[in-house]
Amino acid sequence: MADLWLYVLAVKRLWAIKESAEIWKRISEKSDKHIVNSSDSSVYTELKSEYGKFVGTRLIIMSVVYVVAIVIAYLLPAYTSNPYLVRWLPFGLIFSASFMFAWIQQLPLQIFWRMDQLSRTLITARLSQIAILVPVVFFIFKDMTFNGSTVSLIAFCCIMFSVVASSIWQNIEIHFRSRKILPLKIKFDWKFTKDIIKRNRQYGVSYYLSSFHTLIVLLFLWLFYPTSSGHDYTGIRALSLSLIEILLIIPSSLGNSLLHKISNYSLINKRKSIGNLLLLITWIGWLIAINFRLFADQIILVVSGKVFLGSFVSLTARWSNQVLPFLGVVLFRSFIKQVYNYLFVAVDKQNVLLPINLIWVLIGVPLWIRMIPTYWLLGWVVTQLTIELLFVIGVIRVGRRKKVQPVFSWKIWRKLLLVLIVMSAVGYGITYFRNINVLRFFIVALALNLLVIYVSLPTIKKIAKGLTVEDTINPTI
Image (cartoon, rainbow, N blue to C red; front, side, top):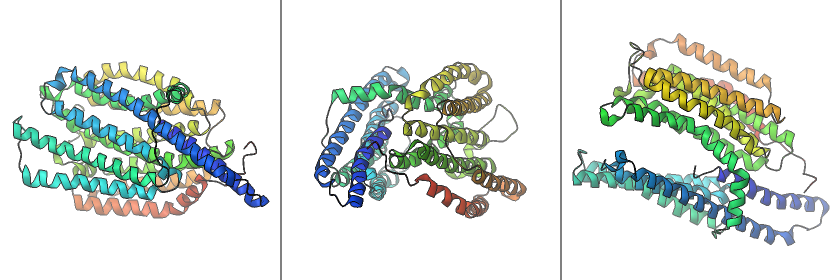
């Protein structure tokens, strides 16, 4: 909610400003006229101004959302009565807010092709967290029992502080790296903020709703089966959903990396670029879904432990390893939906998604209120699969109606699909790896996935080249 898709809009806007100067530079080089030199400083000034306004807008939206969130949280007895939760809330919100601020500060790194510096920043930030965690966990508070004692609360706060310290260090480092490219002067331009929210409020809300139906499921699970009442298995079974939420960053990362590069493309070339993105994301999504089906037990075992594993004896005893294969399909469908999010932003149709997302959330919420208490995980999974499919159908229909459907090669898609079908068949044909054995899992899973990647690599390279196509200079500039 605090994001409101602001980063994507900022990337698109700042790149358009920078690209306008680049286009004039290409024109001047061809005509031997140095018409760009006089405009360099003005373009740079405009970039700094817009950058400062976007950062100011992020701070305004972020402050409002997080203040409201923590006020509401402290009004809930379930939070305030728990000594750990009541301390976790400010740490969690400070970390989230700090991460959001670091995110918007990285704009110059992306606009000027310096994202390798961001990678270094992320590495050093996580190392700073580890530097705090190691002595706290293994030396100062070794073998700590979290029983509500003062010492355990101090240990808990130290662990949470490591996350906050990591995000603060990330902010500091990104700030120093970014200001060398584009100095930051935060501007609280209320008219700018109001216009951004007004023009893109529908898309911002629809973007929130596109993930809300996944998040609301967790809230319902905790509501109907609270761990405080002895339902410890709720957290165990929710692990698979947490894995899905983490992987949702994949299409966002690729979409953010592509969007600014195609902002000045013609409509047809935007559709071709997004079409190739759709092929790439679809391939990645199916690859993950197949792995979730073939290696569900081993994946859960590696990331958590045996306590998260269950058997197929009873329909009411579904644990994370049984839910993961179904959520792999949910993830795949969500990947497609996110690509269409970027398509509509690229073609300036970002507000068309609100009716679709709102309708299916309004349908899904009452269904889950009924299905989850009655059918537990079975009701949740079936409903989520259906809702996600309806989301995908909805965005495809809107794309066709607006005549902005992604353009891609069905021949290439058939090649990738054939490889994935063969992978599934080979995976099912191997029976010995189904025993819970970490070593066998790594050997079989690694070999199978490397083979699929090797066979698919020539096609993937062709798709990657199609992500950014050469476009003619826009005659309207």
